[in-house]
Length: 118
Image 1: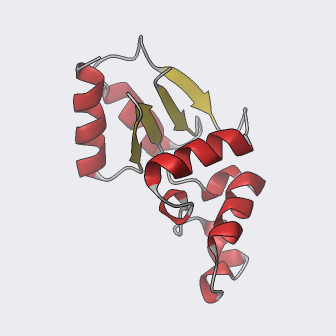
Image 2: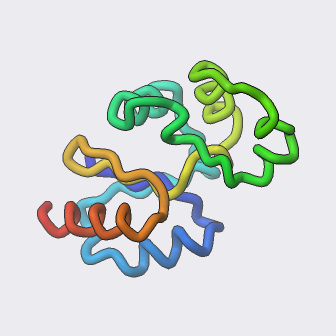
């Protein structure tokens, strides 16, 4: 099923969801209430090309843990994505086996267009 992975407490995610054209065919997955599984992270990675592509380097935890000063590997990115929801770029849409990661305007326009075609 087509899914949006988001954080319910995130103002940006709420604003994006409110602006979506149609959500009746979309499964909503709050990553704080229902943490991502390894299978879900792996599926996202397969669609995105890497774990790093899914990883938010804007997360406060990224800076406070000193991760920005380390040379992280793909295994590290996966480990941190599984450990804490804050490391996932949000929102992540998977629509018709295509992934849209993050809240850039271009990404949201593309995800919205894909939803209209469902």
